[in-house]
Structure formats: C-alpha cells, structure tokens
Length: 146
View 1: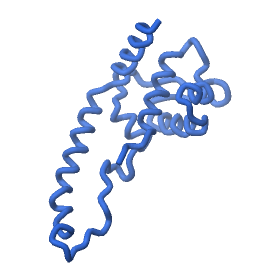
View 2: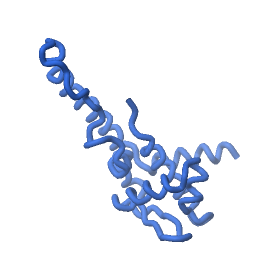
View 3: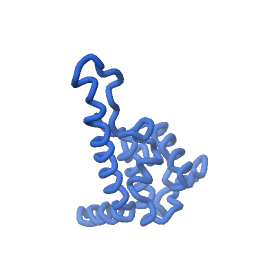
View 4: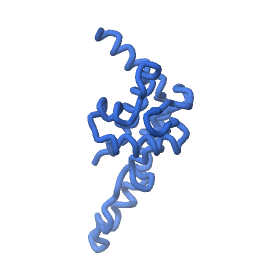
C-alpha cells in the first residue's frame, strides 16, 4: 500500500513555485513540464492547495503563488490539503474478516490501535518538516549542481 503520489506532486509544485517565482510565470503548463504529468493533474492539486489557503492561482496565464509563509506550511498541511488517503486513514483494513475464525474475529482488536499509533507517528514527523526546510534543501542541491 502506498500513499497517493498527490503528496509528492504537491510538494514538487510548491518547490517550483518558490524556486521560479519572479523568473517565470508559474502556470499549470509550466508545472506540468517539471513534474512530467498532465496539466489537469496540476490544476486539480493547485485547486486543493488553494482551498487549503496555501497558494493563490490567477486564472489564465497569471500563474500560481504561495501565500502562506514557507515556515508555516508543514508536510502534514500539504498531506491534508491534497487528501492523500481515504477518510483520513492511512491503513485500509480488509472489510470482512471471518468472525468464525479466531484470528479473523480478533485481528481488528490486535491491529487497530497499533495502526493508529503508526499513522500518528508519521503525522507527527510530517508536522516537523516545513516547506522552508524542503525549499532550502532544494535550492542547496540546485546551487551545488551549477
């Protein structure tokens, strides 16, 4: 099982917006070229990021801009904005374990709390990583490659 690629694409979008602001109009087509996906995918994610108050998008050729300070945008904010998992749950439990089987009857009791703790640990770590951290590392890598 994997978290949807929407998270990494959204981070890529934000990194491009910040990196290329003032240098290029950062449109969905421009972003699609960097991410190497269809611009429709970019527009959907920009719409979700806008609804979360992370970006503003000017229709047409106006482009996108980040409207929240980078150090106030966490990976968890982005994760929630682009809805990477269904119903907020990272782990999807199989629907109907056999209640006549002793394992099937007890598997939820065994795993539910542990899966919740794993998800909480992941989310706590995501709260610690900001777009400012990710942008600084991205710019450092770009600088070292030139």
